[in-house]
Amino acid sequence: MRYTFKSTTSALLGNGRGADVFTPWNVIIDTDEQTITLTKRNRIMIGVDEDTIAFRFIRRVTIDQHVFGADITIKAVGGTLTAYSMDKKDCKKIKEILMEYNNTRRKGGIVFA
Figure 1: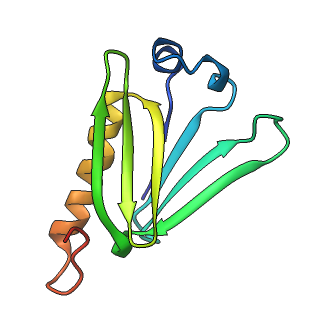
Figure 2 (figure 1 turned 60 degrees about the vertical axis):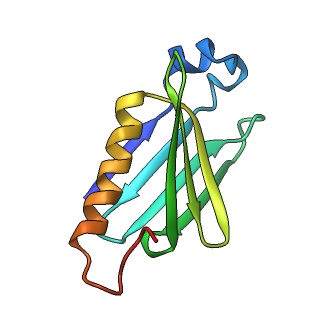
Figure 3 (figure 1 turned 135 degrees about the vertical axis):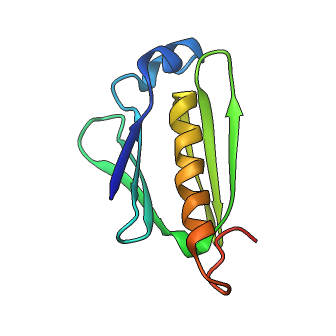
């Protein structure tokens, strides 16, 4: 199953990230391929920056809530993914998807250490 989440315009404006309204962060979770991808269009609107990590390398999920929206940071072995000004419900859903995956894994395939 593929889930897609996107930064909200109101959260971007409310958190002082008005310049990113045209280039929001997108989080794509693919449970079939067991990957999480963070994409963001470049400021000059020519290309897209993309980071992908496998579920098995994820070690921590942190949600930093604000008055408008929340930031989610996914810490993995060898790097960190951060998406800013997401909807609070979307951040909780991302964490639930990853925790549910973690609970279905057998011993030895644990995502969160």
